Image 1 (tube, one colour):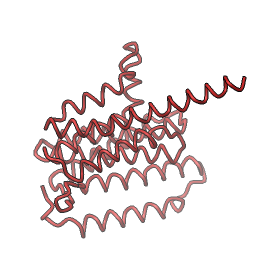
Image 2 (cartoon, helix red, strand yellow; image 1 turned 180 degrees about the horizontal axis):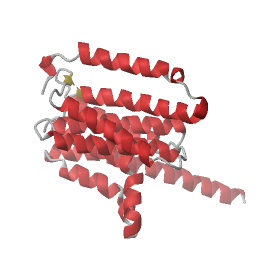
Image 3 (tube, helix red, strand yellow; image 1 turned 120 degrees about the vertical axis):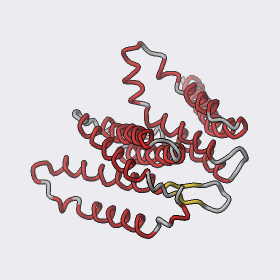
Image 4 (cartoon, helix red, strand yellow; image 1 turned 90 degrees about the vertical axis):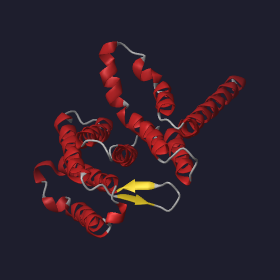
Length: 260
């Protein structure tokens, strides 16, 4: 019996090590192949292939599977696009993206607590909006609006599904619409914060929508917690903090030198 337990534990350890190695290979490989090929196509294909289970179901379950894995897909595809738009040569940002995606796959994605799901959603918002803003800089605003709606919808749905909220359709749609509206307002004045020659570029819109997503989720949780006794004072702190922070960002860090 003791030998059986030992063998089983050994197999579990070996299986975990293989799982970590494969995820590390994906995290590094998705960025590496994108930079070497100077194209996002192979990187995106690699991300999609890693999610083959989404498509290995009957047609009627495909939509549900896609919705359930939207946050993970957004993170993976965004990492590839950010690496592609950083340029064909290796920069600091590429190694940062390798680390971020590897940590996401190995540590962050498997977590299922309430705080973890919120963190996963915020990461998807930040990376997704960053990639979308840079990609859509010279495209029609409708492209950024639609992508922002999808990201807002996916991030909100991810949190609500994990919290076992039974009726979340309206909440997710409202979040997506607000994302789309803010993206439309910001499209004509896209601000990108650059950091020397590292290749790191952070769109102002990504920061604003990440703050909004956090406040939005906090307000939703407060409404559920207090229900009929809900008062604005219950969310006053985060709302004021978020509004002030966004105000400072818009008023004092919108130097035209960053405008794209």
